[in-house]
Image 1 (cartoon, rainbow, N blue to C red):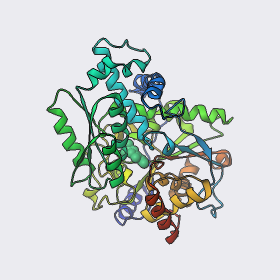
Image 2 (image 1 turned 60 degrees about the vertical axis):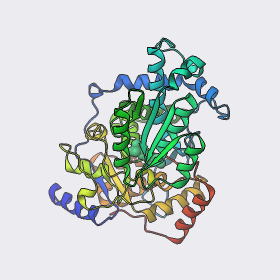
Image 3 (image 1 turned 45 degrees about the vertical axis):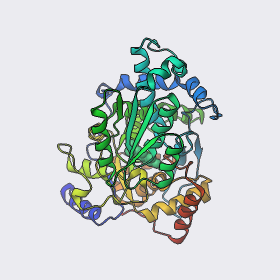
Length: 439
Ligand SMILES: *Cc1c(COP(=O)(O)O)cnc(C)c1O
């Protein structure tokens, strides 16, 4: 099939909500001169490491030295009846990040820390580059108390921002969309965060929050669709993964390719990670994003070209999914262009497949994750069970090296999920035994 015919067939399958793997034909050899946010990523890495003592002070219950470090653990592939899966699978356990219980601890915490640092510097309370522990002192808290931090969220970003903003002494407001889970709202209210519920979807919650904050000079809106501070906070995770791989004795290179599968909502978290990993590993890193069949916003945007924003509603999808962290109809237009030459592809999965993968993670890997995070386990399956995936491996001459390949499934959330909700995920996964095959 030529490219046009292939794209027409793909669009048809996207509209029918079939799980697909799309391969990005614009993927290009990585050019380090083309890293517009290089410096901002380095600054984020520095800021996050300068915040460790502050976070221990703010959260005495933390119990870990580095609140920003998640484990990297070996795990079995899902659907392992499939003999074509070769190499080793690791799980990057961001679901276990403390305080936020999700990947939002990276970008969200970074943005709030960056804002607090700027305020403290402008009030003469901190010097640039200094350890951030001073942000816990009364003088800094008195400044922060004048400001409101707000955010629009389907749940997890609100949890992350709300928790750290209120701990630093800011007022915090979280605008939540209709798909936000009740327990996430309650948890925030318990922390003294104001939760504003919106009847509409995530983009509408963001829009309202953005409008409210624009009229208030003492308000800062954490803009998930546009924020560079969020993006580079996520990108800083790449160096952490690189160090963990090295500690395992794993050297990524042409003969040991790295495949990373990250669940994608608006694109900030997976985009930041992709950006960071391409800086470090260039063409030896292969980045794949996973999206629900009802909300494949990044896929739809990349397939449509980047001239104008396109939403999943525009192509007849409804953005309704149990993967609430991924229930986003419109991809970030900050991130999409940065992915054009970096992203290897996007796979999609149905909710019943995600529940089966939640159960796989629980039973085979001992990991309790939410459906959004389980998306990551679909990545290796999409790659080896689909014709598009096999063509990709052939085109990049990876066949012979696949036995040495390292796959990383990035589990993005779940450790704070209440027990009753966890049981519901697991029993949904037990009722259904969907085929884990991509065509
Ligand atoms: C937010 C989130 C993602 C995706 O992050 P985006 O920046 O929205 O793309 C993935 N998984 C979970 C659990 C999340 O909360």
